[in-house]
Length: 317
Image 1 (cartoon, rainbow, N blue to C red):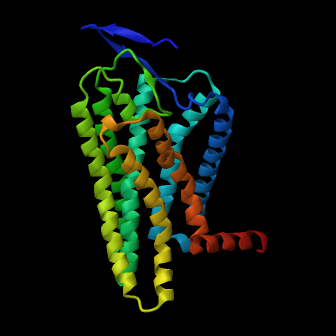
Image 2: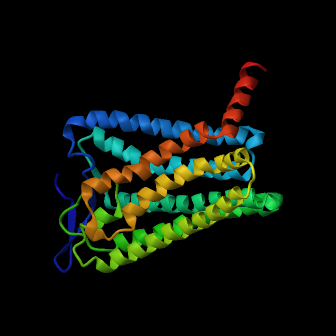
Image 3: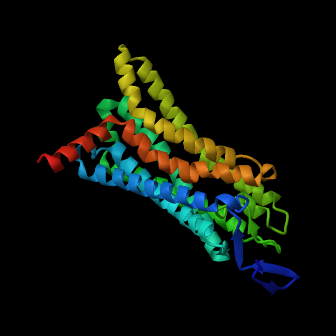
């Protein structure tokens, strides 16, 4: 495919579009991949939308925990919608191009929503800490105003992080090659296309990524350290099990999201391996949003009880 370029001074070229190679190294299973990812995308949309509606409709779920879960589900819908529809189009079509501006926008929203999820998961951990360790003060410490402020702060943190990442990468000059060996415009493969020394940019991106991954993760660890101490102080085994069960769903989501994101973005760009990193990216862009509604539905007694109440109300009056 021809590269669309226009000449600028000093014998440099500026790209007007990129080519997302995606999974073109698997030409024999393009239709299978399309069907699989389409089904997953539909499940992600339906599952997360169901959680949003359920937590809005059932008055027993009008608590801070489910307010943050509603935010997380909405974020997951937005997150997958940034990358998956374009990936589906590329699998179905021979034209895998994306404009320079479109690539920048995709990068921006990927990191905006990813950064917001880091802080939202930390906020959810803090909510569980207050609920378990300070139950008598919970209604005051986690009142409506505080919850709204924490949610807004989580979304704003992602906005600030993404702006820095995107501006650092897309102000660099790119060389003749415009082929991105990925299914979306990610920073590591984009840095490989730059025609200047990217060492400073790599360090800056690495530092910012570490801050926005490490700080929320430390908050999560501190919250769960307090939770574990409180749980160990409960005399009955049944009480300990019941208390910990309120955190298990959140822990699964945290482990999957932070585990894959840390492996991907907390390593130097020199260790970038296109194919393995491409498949690793699927965990936090596709698998994690898919598991979110499944984990919170099948492992959460309150959600299952709410579903049962709505079912009985609808069919049995």
